[in-house]
Image (tube, rainbow, N blue to C red):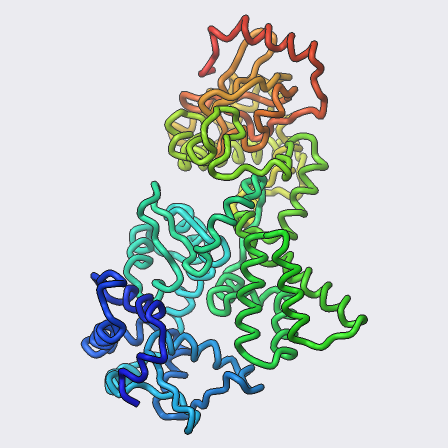
Length: 552
């Protein structure tokens, strides 16, 4: 089949997508023909056959070799599509524009790149490519699971599973051609944002359904789960999800039905659209035969899989795990949960009451750090390190939490502090007037760290009123003073929005460098203030507002 005939089998948008991913300085869509794009693509493959290795996984290369030797028939409309080759063939079609002869039923490689593909396949190092694939699947799995990252967050999550320097990671993302169909780098944002290409069209839906409680969720995918998501689009390490996938493969007749339903299911679980899941279920039941008894079983299976899928509106946390943590939080009056019915979009007024858009205020970390409303990332890590070391020292002295034998035991596997342990220890810790000096005498710290912990002798523990937010800082007051208090990793307004103020609170205020923070617990009481009490707080604030304390 001639090249021009093959090109006519493909749409211009698909070819341009591949062309713009490979060519260094692609021409504008309207200024280049399909034929010229294909010539440019094939020139890259022919000039450097290693590119063929770089843009394919090992499984794709193995299948490409079979296509080259005419061992692959077109199984799109046959039951045998379940041998997993269908989705790989679709990827190879996009990358190499395979031709299809309806008479012989064989897929084939265009003659213009056949020799280069043969040359590339001669030089395969199977072990090296499989090792590379595992790294690539991990990275793609991360972007598919969480949808978008700043580079710093992307590296933070990645470095939990793989040892690579920050600079090497950034270069690897930017220079590896395999990632182009999966990761879009938005340099217009500040900071640069890495976004899942596959789900980019749903960004507005994700932001409009964003769950404000998501910063509170403690959850990380395991490495093998991320690799599965990167390789299969979906987490086959989860038994509920795997069960649904096997059910679809066993009961759907054609590969295109499976691919369409799988993509739809992933998107609906990620975006959390109210009508999305019913539409998926309706489409599924149009494809399969079922009776009343099996319908209940199928619905239960779908819901279990759905609730364990990555949910991008929860920052990737599956709905089941998010709900589990929200229920636990709602049962603990020490930390209120933002009302889900009052979700804030990026362009809505910020929950801190500043009057600015959320994206320009409490969603903007650089703005918050500049206004000293939260600690920098490095300072927050330093605070948690010192706080946990002090908790561990106190625990050893009083034997409060028997499960915690060393500082590492105070952290979840995802790196977050186990709040319950610290909560049990802190009261005894702050009651002990000698604990700081005893800790410093027995612990080796840097001069800066020693100075920070020593400053905690000036702590203030008691009942307060969280009155208002100003420039991201919480104005927290007692009868004598107003303190401008910063958040640690997030602004305090993330947990206690402005519409809930004034709120009665109990906490310990701590100095940290040139700021006032709190000891990770800002307990609020479920007591509504009447008009008289609110008026009294207004009067106290007016009396003290000219002398707001910013340092202890």
